[in-house]
Length: 199
Image (cartoon, rainbow, N blue to C red):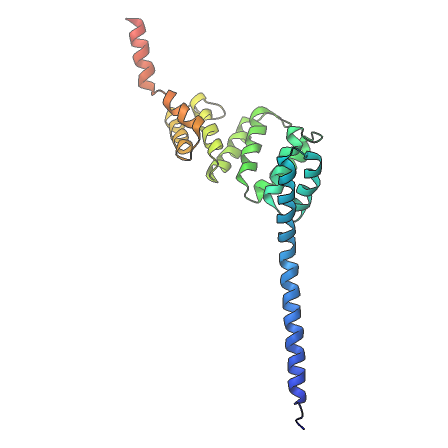
């Protein structure tokens, strides 16, 4: 009869316990992310069918689990009026998403400050948010910066910088920026127009 080594039994027991513990730890660490992704997907399906009432708690769950896109969508829902309009909550969720690097939230905050939507109108803050969004690759904010420089909104008027921002936005595929570039005239153009009108 073959007797098992008692140390082998202890070794197998410890290895099994460690393996189960590691698997449990891995499940616990990935569960919130998985749950956030599932909630986000379900919420987006609700948005597709314009079921905003049911999308809201799903976005909330995903946001509570750290989903920056869900935070952004909560900000949009609260600012758009698709659910009870609450600009304070909108700004809070957009800020959280922006802090997590979500560029759409940065751009939306820029628009809120630019238009005075639920906040005091502040072109300086609008420019700061659009700058952050543009630096993160948001083509709409690149175009907004172009407009600000073209018309001197919150910055010194600078056609050269306006052209640079419009070009960056156009290169990123923004059709509004392409149109703005085609219509943007150099300062020499206006000088020539004035000379012609005087003669």
